[in-house]
Length: 331
Image (cartoon, rainbow, N blue to C red; front, top):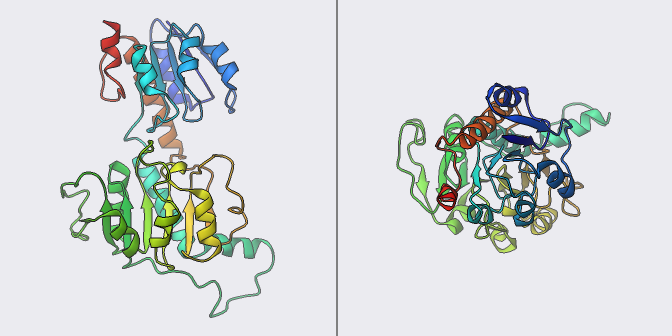
């Protein structure tokens, strides 16, 4: 069976593919994505595709690759794939949940601390040679300990962020379509009052708002101009989830007019392009999609994506199937 890997990935993934019997592996060995036409050409004979969130896998792609049976996405999210089209064609889609939870939660807190304590501004000041020494009014920022953290989405990553917030004595509240049952992990003894609230209450009462919701048509621009206006002027917005959850143009306007104190962003609406004016703002910390960027996490993501691909091609069932109904189409 022929498989194609769309971009250079950590060696753990390639090792897992090469260890599988009966696979003929070809790959793009460059750390740069292929154009849609190049990706189609490289995948036309493939039964399995290991791709990344940056690869657009739509109905046209699938029609041009008629032998395709499995699409293994090296990501938790899969909004780059037209899953319904894949299901209709009997193409199984898989993802890599769980393995990047800790790394993304860590980065969430890194951004939260960095924007509150103005670390980006401070580093730029020192590097530019403009720092003239300590001053009692220099770069005063926001307090983190004891403040209220509002989590939009309470899945694996949201829970992990809540656990980290306990170490800062933060009050945690969350908005989700489903109540999360208290347990020792998501509701630690040092922070027992994790509250489910409505979205408007969360935005109006939180000192920090962190986004951990999936991206879909219902959550597109979940944070828009109106909802940004509900935030306190002293509040901070953190996004390590998906860029299009936020109307980035509206966010720039809110930051420019100081309707909120700042933002820490790892993802962007039209990534890697930024909304006009965002890069010029001092009250934002901008990271280049680093949520899962640790050696251990990316290696495990690659290994899991490869394992998903191999098991699916071999007809083995596993818990990382996004659209198991696709298998019914093959019957």
